[in-house]
Amino acid sequence: MVGSISLKNWDKNNKKIEIGYWLGTEFTGKGIIHRSLKGVCDLAFNKFEVHKIEIYVASDNHASNQIPKNAGFYLEAKLRDHALLFGRYLNMSGVINK
Image (cartoon, rainbow, N blue to C red; front, side):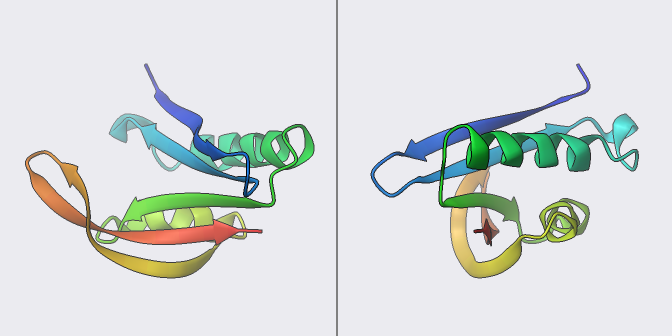
């Protein structure tokens, strides 16, 4: 498996949805997630007619933070101890695309 990208936590009342993604380290730097993110955003905005897309990225994962920035997202919030991963709580950056 190369990686995954998904739409999740769809809030139909407020017309917003979250995108999550993961990519194996041997496949990074090839534009795979960037192209996938563009396609998923097009789907969310055009087919599902969402108003807002959210992505939460570990604050200390600089490469993963660049992906939404390069796709036109902007940083809206820094969230402390937002996600439990591998036995520790991670600070997350909340990036938004409207």
